[in-house]
Length: 590
Ligand code: DON
Image (cartoon, rainbow, N blue to C red; front, side, top):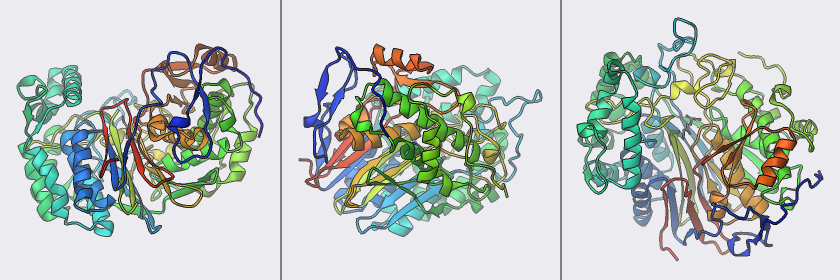
């Protein structure tokens, strides 16, 4: 479908990105603002025999170490996850959950859901205060925690696809828990944690004693360059190495979790822990301009919402629109707000809600949604509703991408929800518990911590999984060969960040670094505004968007994409998002 050109970027330099190209036939021209803080010419890590991109350099090194021992991408993902739980406590975890998308070189695809569940004692209104309003107990303290899924999930991934010994994959994390040198970003994170806990009333602060003892010894974050030791966590990891999931969901670790629940007013029981299962699911698979996108199905909203956005966008020639143009950002925002209104209404745990997924993913439905879009005016969100028809109702996360030498690929996004989760560390066990319960619609119709206004499909029910936006994604090229591995943290912005990494690669033929670095936009239906990254769009473009009726809000950064792109010569390019302090490292770097 043709779209009228509305803005030229008068005076902005045209950047010919031939040097940035990866896997593409023709150079693409981007027009970008003159003063641009986003470096599209950054050099990705390039290697032949494997690539690991994570948010933390220790975790990247662990992944590469496992690949060098000829572990496959799933082995490396298991070891990397455990390492993140030690060196990246803001999001890495054993007290949270996540999703893993796998694509083996021989073609097998799989999606593993190890999302937390609501404890059996959870009830629909458990977070409403006496005045009927949600307080902050779904965010901070032991009551905020869902039943953790990570250890069961990693075990399950290893059981199905792993090749090295389980204990060998946990061992690097044990080593790190015994001590590693504090780097500046960990010090920054723990400084923010100290500030956050300091904001609570002294009585409430007692709930976070385990966290203070473990991460802020003497009341201050460990200094840069000193060795940070987590002996309780090392013990827990040793139990997991020796006993598998029984070392977490039973025995000493389970006993310590339940003791902390009793102490701080949480409700997770031994029974909750014992009955937790990870679920294999059919990935969401959709086509975007001939590329095959493999992503996470519900209880992630990511794959389905991204598919709806992408299917709507397929009707427009984005590659003919300057990157920094009113028309491109307008169409992205219009597609996003429609898909998010469906997401927020219909999606939830497949064990509890019926979802109109085939229709949500269909080209016919995308065409209907497209026909509502006015290329010359923003549709107010109040006029955009969920449109899938009636259904018979029966800041912190982290992503990493790994490809091994055989071209098996793994995309993992894992979380304890906001930074440092519930702020509760299980005393004696040394790990933070998630605050994933806030991802439910704590009161349907009221916004959650990410401003998402969600409905009945995502209301709290005992045993149910809370809806997620995490979108680990693997893309195949037009020959059905592995092409891109991508994903991001950042709540609902995950979906739009991953979608833009896809579009940057397909429509703008960007390199791994460029597709990660390029500035992003976001719209989630409510609140009704486009969020743009500051400095990423020219004043003329922002003015043009306002003239179409869009409210604009600027933020310093959104998402943190960790991506691997396969070049036409078969080499791997890896890029860690400069918005974070991660690292891409290859095996046999070129
Ligand atoms: O699963 C979700 O959608 C959220 N718990 C993700 C939270 C998140 O990404 C926070 N990150 N910065």
